[in-house]
Image (tube, rainbow, N blue to C red; front, top):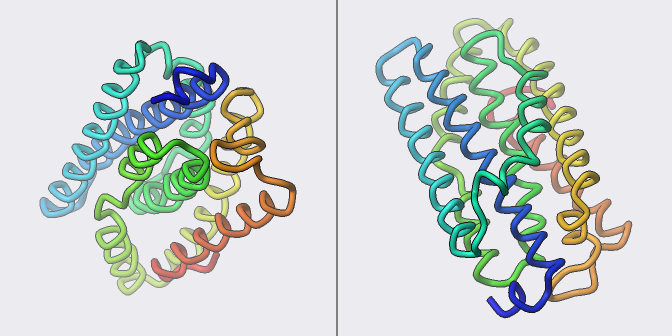
Length: 225
């Protein structure tokens, strides 16, 4: 807590990070709950409903942390409504399968980005960020569902692969937009808590890791990155 009390710029960065994560989790809850209503089977509805509930619990945990810092969660989330809403407006799935791929690939690359930032946080904040970025069990469920759909109709693989490529481009653009518009948040990349910050080479390696993780997720679903 000492860093949060003694360094106003770092505190502002933490509030921004928790704010964007909180709104991201709230948006994910709403989107996955809507997808659950379109599930083809009862088992799928149960699985997606459980994922949506976990997203909302993460939102509540982030909100509690913001209130502990003396910040209204609604105020902290407000700057991120437009970029996140724009991302979802530009990547609206056309069917249930596209919604699953978006939940795994689109959300996954965003969470990877926040995990990269987490290494520059104080231990307490880092632990919270990593906890809310954990896999909620969606990987096994989504991978199995997409692979089963491809087995039934191999033609869907090409369409979903194109969709995955679009998602990664939109997600990276959103992350860059958020970082560019919030000086305090971008400062976590160029100057951190435990080290002086990331140089261009390190940022390049970070982008390479994000791309590699995206390719791995696509391959797990049986899709070409």
